[in-house]
Length: 338
Image (tube, helix red, strand yellow):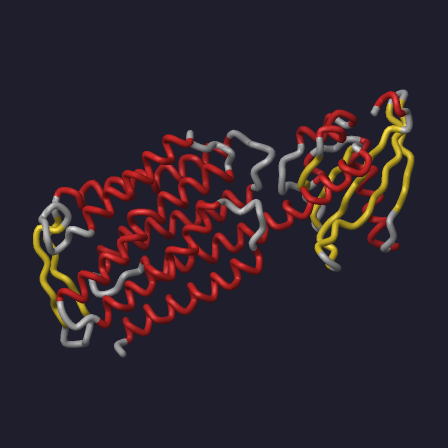
């Protein structure tokens, strides 16, 4: 096996490991588009490996067609997942049109060897160092393919930067930064990789990086999912206010009842420190967190604001037995205010 075949084999193995990790960290909040990326990537990696081991032009072209699943669909899925996370989704019919366009484009890929619409010509070459190469003359549809990839990549970056500049409080900055780094690497791997060498496909490694990036995002999101479940459970039990912070005291979530009682919570941005807003209530909560850290026990307090008195319970936010943050449960002592 040549070093390049070994490289593709390692990428395939890593993609399978990433799928196992994906199953372990999955939660219902994960976008279906991310699931599609995880499903496609090992198939694409297998295509790269098959290409490097091919013995003739027929085997090489078949493997190449498999790898084009990535170009036709992966960036689209990443775009749709970014829109989902940034809460700026397309209409259903627009998503259907884009997916249909990807299918049509992939239909053009499948004509390689039978038509000149995607490749005008293709020939097989095995270099002296054992590297398989295809000498290709591109057809008109391949130009459309390049244009589509560039548009998707730029749209992803634009959506992410716009979301961050718009300062949406419900989209974690960490998630946006992971997406941006992931997309910059994808651009470099695809365009610069082709200029650097025709013998090796850097996109094989980039697909693994994309999977790892999504795993990081899913781990972040699992924290928010646990916080959301805790808030739902509290709301179902008493219907009062509920606020969550992570173990570093970064804001996660506050329900409507909590925001109505303490409007400053509306100004907190997800994944940012609670100290981003200096108000008497938040400063007192910080002191209560300090006491909770020292004692390890759930604490109950009374907090007065104007003409109202609130019962506040400060406790640990837990995932299983592991402490992953803080919860603040708020209830108004006057039932007429609930």
